[in-house]
Image 1 (cartoon, rainbow, N blue to C red):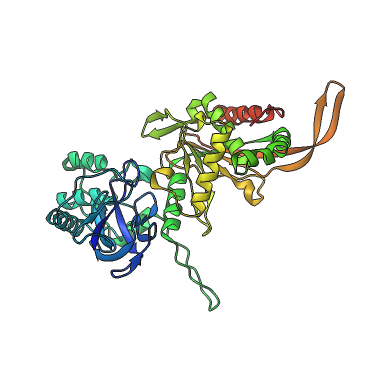
Image 2 (image 1 turned 90 degrees about the horizontal axis):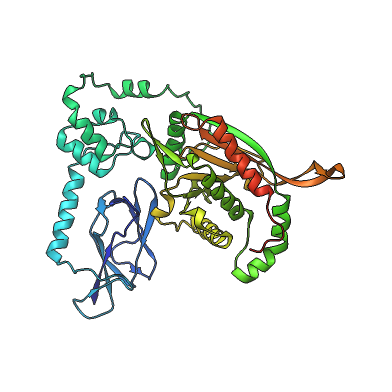
Length: 433
C-alpha cells in the first residue's frame, strides 16, 4: 500500500491558514477521487478539501477547530501501490518530499500554537490566529483586544494594527476593564425580549449567516449611505437579445442572459468615472487600478455570496457571459474558490430577479458603491420622433445606486448612473455578439 499526504491547499491571496470545521470522512472510510474529506473555514469563506486520489483514510493529523497552515499535511490516505511509497497528487507541481519526523514536528508546532492562543470565543469579533498569538505573547486580554481599532476587512484587527497598538501601549490612558455586562451595554442597546409560544421554532443562524449579518451592520455604521435612482429604457437590448439568443446558444453552448450585458456596461461606466472605483483607508482614498466587479448571487439556503469578475473592463460580451455563467453556477453549487470572492472594487446586485422593481442595497465594504438592477417591465412611454410625440410600449428598468457620501458626492453618484443609462439606451440592435 502507498501513502498519500492530503495537504491544505492554497486558499487565495493573503490567506495563509484555515480552521478545520469538520471532518466529512472518518478514519477507516474509503474515499473516491474528488470526494470531500474535510471542511475548512477562513475569515473570508467556508471551503471543502477534496481528495485527489482514491483510497482509505488511515490517519487524521488535526482535530476539529485546529488552525492549519496552507501546505501542511492534514491527513494520510492509503492507496493501492508499492508498499511504503508516497503518492503525489496527480498533475501537480513536484515538491520536495518531507520526512515523517518533519511532519510530526510540524503537527506538534501547530498544536502548540493553537493551545497557546487566547480564547476569543466569547467575542462577536473575528481575530486571526496570528493576532491572537501576538496578544497571548504580549499579555493582551480579550477585553483589551476588543478596544483595538481594526483597519482590515470588516474592521478586523490586522497584524499591523496590533503591533502599532503595542508601540503606543505604554502612552495610552488606563481604563477600567468593563465586565461582560457593561461591555455589552456599552457596545449595543439591550435587545428587546422575544416572547415564544409552543408553536414557535428556534433556528440557529448559520456561520455564513452570522458573518453576513455582522458585515451588513458594520457597513451601515461605517458608510454614510445615499441613494440615487434612474429609469433606463432597455427596449433595444431586449429586442437584440431576443434576436440573437438562439444563435448565441448554438455557437457558444450556453445561454445569453441580461446580466453580462449590464455587467459589461457597468465596467465601461466605471472606466469613465474611476473615482467610484475606490476604497477609504482612514483619511486616505485608495484609487483601485483594476476594475473587479462583484456579482451578488443568492444561494439555495437563502444566504448571499459575491463572486468577483476580475479585470471586467477587459472582457468582451462573450468573455463576460462565460464568466458570469460560470461563477453563478459554481456559487449555487458551493464550488467557488476563496480567491474568487476577494478583491472586488464595485458590486452589482440584481434585485429584479425576484421581481423587485428596485432596492437600496448596502455597500459591500471596503468598496464605496453598489448598484441594484431592478426588474425589466413593460410601460407606456412618450416616444419623441421628428414627426411628433406618441405613446408606445417600452421595456424599462429602474437602477438604484447606493454610495458612500463620505467620499462620493451626489454629483458623481448621479453622473455615474446617467452615463450607464446613456450606454444602455444607445445599444446597437444590429451589432453581432
